[in-house]
Image (cartoon, rainbow, N blue to C red; front, side, top):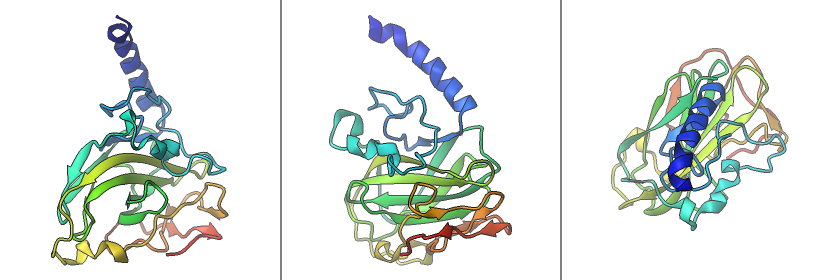
Length: 227
């Protein structure tokens, strides 16, 4: 009976969290998200940034849920196709810059699919192309965001996805081979790399797939790892 009584309360709290928090990835549904059908322990603070000391990088630490009941795959994708991720929330902090990335080793390393410079996440839906040579199997998809205004932070949500097929012969410019993609930029997480308030982050290694909507940009500062 408790299972039937509590969801209404949970839903209300979830809506309030989305309305008054920051931003979160609603599609594909992230690990421990209220939008994820596999979630049994909802994180109602999904919109919060990563800890400034980096203790929950990557994925707010939820990549550890892979191979558990809560860590099931939520979607299957095919190499060479166009897909999107969707963001929910209202506190956009003037936008900023985002990246969409994949990890094939449970979050230890990341490859960038697309970099969005400026105005992210002012729109709810963002498209990317899955490279034609993306290997088949289990992967983590990540949305990461560096806000423009306010405390300089890093936001990151991750979803478990399945890549079907693989090794496509497609070689269009936007589908530049996965092996040539840059690594995900990590900043504001106690690693000596930071971002500048009031500017949209210009990724030093954005990769071949870029959407640029800002001329008011600044690169990261400090010791930032390069691909």
